Amino acid sequence: MQSNSSPSDAVSPTCEAQFVRIAETRREPLHFYLDGRKVSALQGDTLLTAVLMQQRRVRDSEFSGAPRAGFCLIGACQDCWMRTEDGKRLRACSTLVTAGLRVLTRIEPATAPAKSHSGDAQ
Ligand code: FES
Image (cartoon, rainbow, N blue to C red; front, side, top):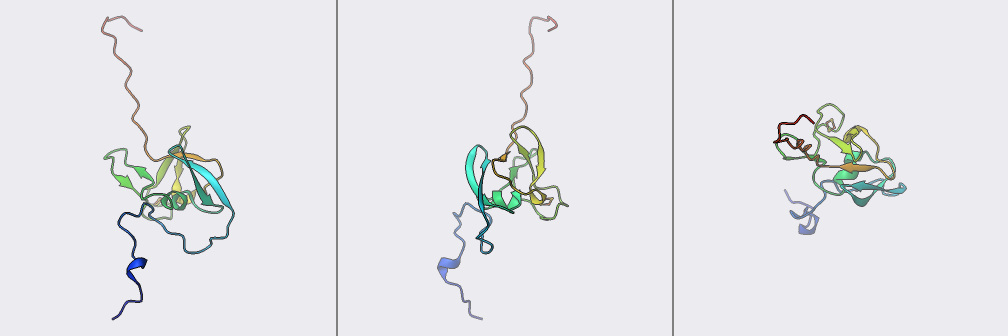
């Protein structure tokens, strides 16, 4: 069987986006913030789509640090939870991206309060 694709059709291993938009390209654009970086999406994109149009992960696992990109895309697997900069949790596959939304892919663990060595209760 012969393929109709050319070598230029292949996805580059250095491609930084997980998704490539091939349809519905005429919706209104908007901007949101991904790890503090201003990026673009289209009205009606889910947050998962918007993020994976930029990079290959929606978050880093809070347990292993491994990159996660969602799995089911229908709100069942819990693999796509993200946080806004103010701490709100969002399920990326069932949340529409909105203009000005500020999301994080990595949550730094809270730093433990410094222990007092003086023995004084504070
Ligand atoms: S990708 Fe499975 S819940 Fe979002």
